[in-house]
Length: 334
Image (cartoon, rainbow, N blue to C red; front, side, top):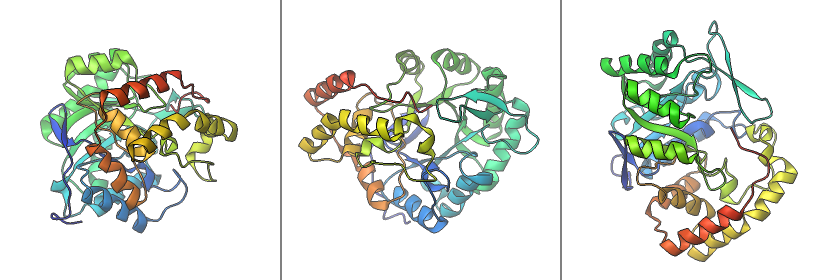
């Protein structure tokens, strides 16, 4: 990873934070997500993302065992910290002694354990700073709104870290429009991270609130957990998608059949299905910064090249009609 190898991508704003139009989601680099992976391969992937122009890397203290993902990023970016903005999240996969608060989700296991009590926020941040080997976090999100803690209280604890310089910008993840408005009244929110892709529409009310408040939008799973690449025919053992009803054998086959017209548009345009899915998101709003993840340098480069794809009004209209008529089997991912 060198200064000269870094390629230029268009820039976008997440509130006051300027980053590449496409970032990199590092969750895929920890074992137990999409099956096994070793750290050497993971670091190569991360370096490929930065060399291909990604200037924002997204992680969480809950990705991998004992902060594995953050520690991986800390090692891989040593000496190159000024090239990237690091976004991380907190309050998921709790340390020993922190009370779990159930957060319901659509996966087979039904709920996650979260805790965003303000009394724990500084400890979460200090642990992330150690793992990431950095003095500050560029964008810091509560991973999920805690059902047992007012979001405004959690935001207040992050705002204190911003005042001290340990955090540069506040983000929110997996929130509603009302929660965004309430949080923004306590401290300016730079970005909202939401599940959004061709097979998971964003909530119109949340999009409207973000635009009104000048808050950037960071779609997680912008490739539908890999589905929108058009390459997923089955899900292997050890892959978290085995818990997602959309990926069971019958639903996956039905969904692949139903998205064939979208893949057809990509073929017409001479781009990959993944590039089409990412370019489509980029055309939805000028403040959208998707964070696709991949373990393969070639695919990482292809994905990030989608920042240069231009879709004309006719193509966007065609895609809009196709997506409106396409019903996805298996509920939502979250």
